[in-house]
Length: 235
Image (cartoon, rainbow, N blue to C red):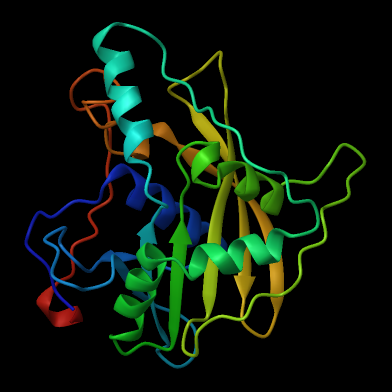
């Protein structure tokens, strides 16, 4: 895999890459150059033992109406909020996930992963707003006040897909909004089941927010982004 010199990640991709790097202990390179060339978003090779290659696609359920509402809110100076209502469907989280992964947008991303050789193929899912599954993603990754977690049955993933990640709740330090954010993750791994993680992402490591959605109030040059381009020798 190779990409255009100087290609950069989107904000969502960078959040996913940084989270996976913390959990997996790898160095992720940008594989698709953001050019819609049908390649997965990122790739890596595990540093220990045989060179096992992993690839990842970062995506989210469609939320066109919510994004339009955020853009309208910005234009009139109104805070953007994630809102919506969905049926709770207690004790049906695995069924909810299975139904989501069977939808057309998810199948397209799974097929993209399956079209490329790799030892591991990961799908990393964001969610914008509760109507896009956000509340379910929170329930997958969070524990309750008594320390317990909601039971979730195992998933049946397409043959060749090793992992699906669900980005749950994010908690930013309101007193230091340009500091770090805690991020809750749920991961289903074929053969090993569910695991949950909490990682910390530094705002300074992330690209600016989409200018249509939110203004970036940090000084020029403040953000320090990782170079994720792939050198021809690494391809």
